[in-house]
Image (tube, one colour):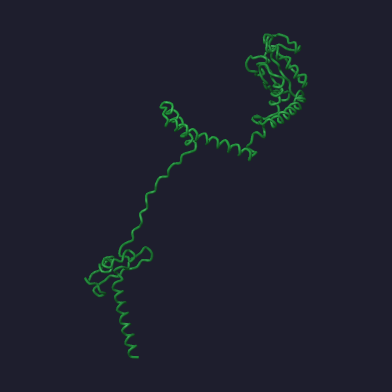
Length: 294
């Protein structure tokens, strides 16, 4: 039992000595770290300073310099990592600029192959040209596939180009045109301007007569020089009608469609036209919207 008490006493004396050493040494390294400030304790002759003056943090040669504990023991201030300077964003090249660059390079290779027709120059031009042909083929193939799979952008559904589709479209168009022209004479009339010296008028007059009789449309023939017409005996002499209607030029024959409801005129065309062409133009001008038929 006395031996045990002796050992406990020795251990206690050792702990007291260590605690005293810590109290003396703490001010040499305890510093503020930017969070909760740790107050530094001045070392004086009373608390164990060897030179009797105040020792600044980081100046203890034994604790910091000789033992080389490093920055994590607050002997040296941690260094902040320097950030590399921000680099300016590289401007992206647009697709139009890239395509223009390809065209310029192709022209340059072609010119070089022509002016300096060496084997190397010709091969370089042919290879680059083939690359662009492959690119164009890929574009064309993708275009066609997109049209097949997206009917909203396939114009051939409105105006077929295939043999069977075009035939069906033409038959439907002819039927619609015939139906419209059958009742068109109730609202529209035709002004026909001609001249006796116009040989084209002699060819065109029988064609216009046939169209007017087939679709029961009224035709008012106007002679520009007073010459009568065999196809239209009731022709009148022009006394400014053409100018008032706003019919441009002096070309003959000239056809003008007149709307009796709106009192407006629409030129149909000038020169010799076939019967089918006359009917098609009248149908387009009166029953289709601009841009919907092409």
